[in-house]
Length: 134
Image (cartoon, rainbow, N blue to C red; front, side, top):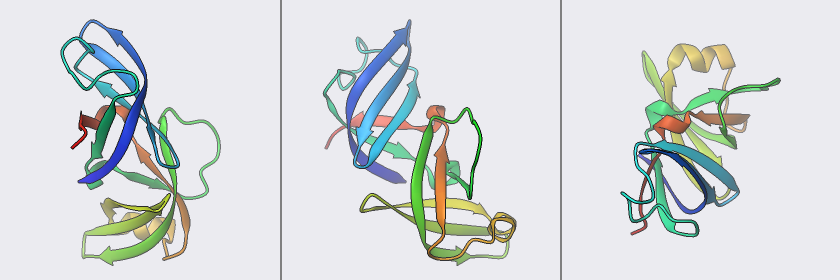
């Protein structure tokens, strides 16, 4: 599980659905949650939180241009590739931290990924989970 410390910076809610912006080192992420400030104690502006997302939910883009609906785009450097027959674990360096992406080995080939490449880690907002800071 990819985990980052963060701070809640903005909350928009409609019923029990919330769109939450979180500042993390080097940038920000957005989470779509089935919670609202009244139902989750950690959902307050300025609250410290843990930001989490699975490596299988991290897509990679190389030389991405144009507009895209994904709000969560982290500029990263490929620091490692563990290639299997079907799947690969790509380790990424981001703002002094490390995160992982699990993609197909075919995708590694299609992107011609190499250690040192600049990529963007893309995470859908509904795949980002928040928890109270430890």
